[in-house]
Image 1 (cartoon, rainbow, N blue to C red):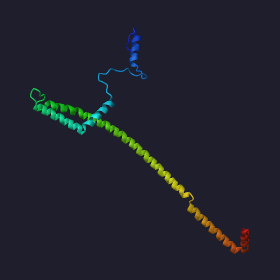
Image 2: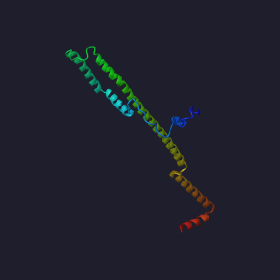
Image 3: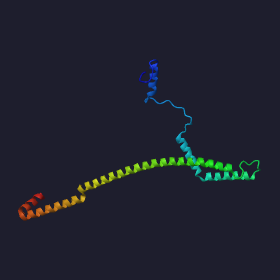
Image 4: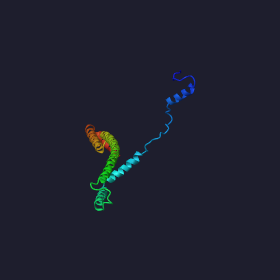
Length: 195
């Protein structure tokens, strides 16, 4: 007996088959399996359910449903007994309305679930957009604060004027002081300035 529990005779072929079954190839897709149930496209079915749910929530549906039920009841009361298909207490009508309700409720729930999924995605996108807007606003706030700080260090027109006026006053005071201390030098300078 070998390690696979096989006899010596025919051991090679049986061993290869056992190894092939045990080994799963992950680099190749599986062969498609046959299914007993039909394949349904969930998006197409969801879109159809939304259309039906949207129609069930309209006044048009209520009017047509009322007309159908009234016609059903009137037919089964007024026409001769031979042509009636649903005698009073209208059991077949009750069955049809129950069937309609049993299909309408899951279709409406499916449509609501799809709408919830869309709302969730929209809310997530809105949340991300709000986060980006907040980040942009904070960035702009920091930039404006930096500009204000920078403008505090920039020489403005009024500041330059006041500095020049201070310098002019200081120069006039020096000239007045020089005239008082050196009167002849002040006149010689005036003569040089006139030339």
